[in-house]
Image: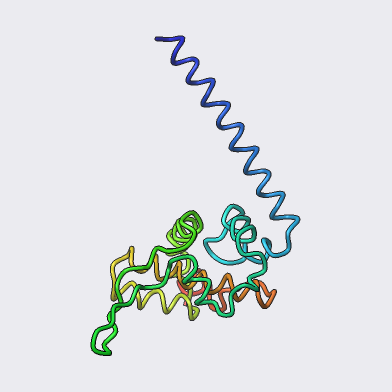
Amino acid sequence: MRALIADMGTQWVELDRRIRAFDAEFAAFLRQNADAQLLSTIPGVGALIASALVAAIGAGETFEHGRDLAAWLGLTPRQATTGGKPKLLGISKRGNRYLRKMVIHGARSALPHVAEYDAPLGRWLKGLLARVPKNVAVVALANKLARIVWAVLRHKEAFTLKGKPPEAIAAA
């Protein structure tokens, strides 16, 4: 039994080493690629998500609008229309499953941080959290982040949360 546990420990250490090597590779890519650097200014987008997005969509020329990228990722609501009355359902879940999952998890990690800011995005998110369940707000934020990704890539400008940081709000 001890030999098996020691062998599993050795495998665990080797996996940790490989993960660190991959993380270093993603960080090196982020330092070398201008588009990935711009994407990393968006809350919830780190080296892994930025490199995956740059690899998948390049500079975003394929998409005419930000909503096209969000739809391609499967982050837009499905619609059912009868008699001219549209009804919005859950997200369509079409497109690249891996990228959609990564953007949603990035939005989940950015949600508390963004909601604290007194900026347009923060105020929108606070209002949304007051109306809908948290997971719905996470997917809506992922949709908005996908649109921001497109705008950042298209206009080649870094994203900023224009507003007061949480420390300034608490001091006021």
